[in-house]
Length: 141
Image (cartoon, rainbow, N blue to C red; front, side):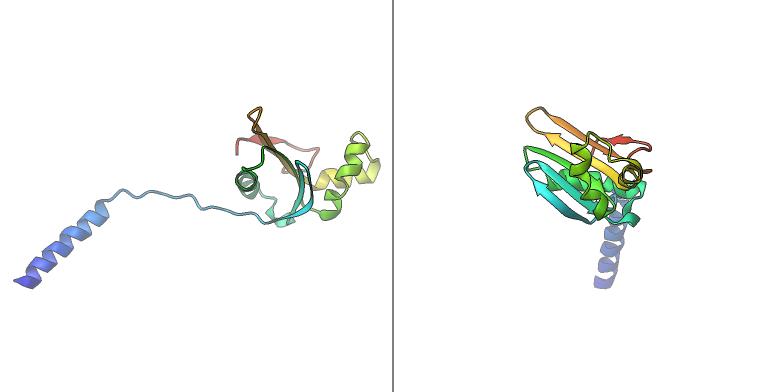
């Protein structure tokens, strides 16, 4: 008798477990990056070239938003090559052109940018699957 009752309770419990709606949780992708430079509100970071996929670049936007959420203002430039990342200041100071092969190299390795300003409620994440002169995809992270 006891085994029948326990068996019936187990059967009911198993049925209840199966009846529970299943909630799908999206896998969280974390994209590793290295901060090459950090000053005031500016961060220049480098990711691995193999992380330059659409899915990982979208995940990177969410990662950057979470990591820098506590800062009132931040600008993050993302590259997939450390040498290109270190060219950022020269590129900015030159007005956007270093000439010929340097421009092509810099643009080829420009991956994304993220910025937010809590005072103005500005937030933007754009990534460039084909480099700085290619397609620009704007995403709300």
